[in-house]
Length: 125
Image (tube, rainbow, N blue to C red):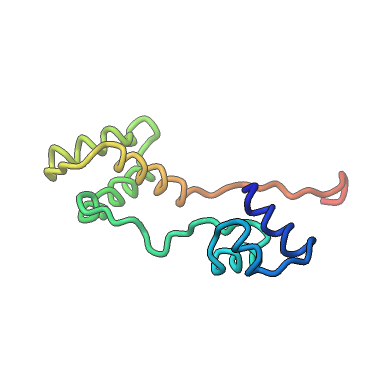
């Protein structure tokens, strides 16, 4: 990050060329061009979702379990560990618990509605 700021200072404030900055800092001219193009380093963004070769075929089963849990009482709902155990015992799942747990957490959060109270002055509801 210090090099990033130093390159931008060298090019924009000190008035040196990008080619000179590449020579001084020992970086390629393409790297210097990217540093000049973005004020902050651009972060990595995933282009396609992570493949789950072991869990992928069982995602509809997990979604069906979670859908059935929506109408069940709170005490009767499946935990992520119980879902993992059912997948392992009933469907022959050979993957890890953490992958199942992460998918269950994301699936439950995406279906949940969030209440956001309106902010208004008292008496103006």
